[in-house]
Image (tube, rainbow, N blue to C red; front, side):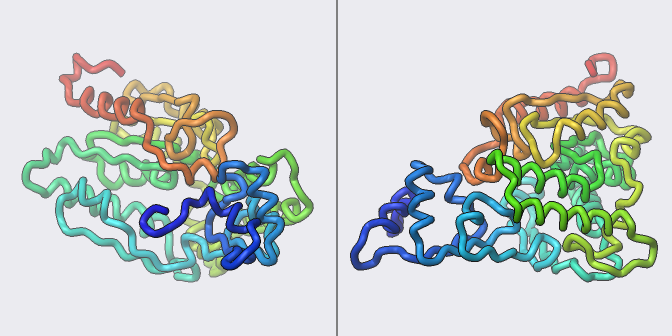
Amino acid sequence: MLFGQKMSGLLADEITTPGPGQVRALFVDGGNPAAAMPGQGRFVDALRSLDLLVTIDPFMTATARLSHFVIPPTMMFEHADLGTRDYESFVLHVPYAQYASKVAGVAGFTVQQETVDDALAAVALLRSLPGIDPRRVFVLGHSLGGLALPRIGQGQPALAGLIVMAGPARPLEDLILDQVSYLAALDGVVTDPEKKQIEGLRGEVAKVKALKPGATDSVLGAPASYWLDLQGYDPPQAAKYLAQPMLILQGERDYQVTMTDFAAWKKVLSGKPNVTFKSYPRLDHLFLAGEGKSGPAEYQKPGHVEEAVVADVAAWVLGLGKKPAERSW
């Protein structure tokens, strides 16, 4: 027992041991215990023996495939959220809270409102605080933040530098399709329901690409305005015309934003003397170390961003503080 609760590794025993309190029904919300629990074979057999197994997940995970019912949750654009301020309190040192209302179906919503405006407001606030050198403010963007970073750089040319971590270089709808296809094949077998899911998603991606100005449809959980805003947007090409130095980092085991995206950044920006690239063979999308193919179960394991990544970012930022003659790009 820990804090009055049993360890999750004991769940297989609780399911298979007859007697009072035997677990015969299980609801799984956003987890994948069939892949994450120790003693995987025994645990899968226990799940199969349940009278009722319900999984709430947007993806057909190993646990979902064993379930009697799979319930799709609302996606990130479809529900309101109150973000944690734990990280921001370390950075801004001022009271901070962020409420995000659901944006699916909100007319006119774009990446500008979702990401860029908040980043520019945070930069303006930081530059106004006592003790902050306004000439030494950097912005780091991860995943979608990396995709939006060229727009943030355009909006605030005085930024000292931009750091892209796992930044998409391709259309988001293509990344979503690639991710779902990858996950379906991760166990070596693409089932008929998974094939049907992928084909349905191809249709949604085609709808995104066919959107015309003035469309009001909601596709893939986001309003048409969101996708129209990104039509024709090429993050590496947009970054090509920025004056700020850039550091572009990528985990080579990342299945969400892959080395294909990293190669696209390098192809466009490798000729710029103030752009630095680095990839890490053992790191995934969250810049956590691992082995073999990365998957969602890996994200459920406690971990920290690899120390080498933090050191590389710090060294690059501090290196930009040198006099120009002392810099080594």
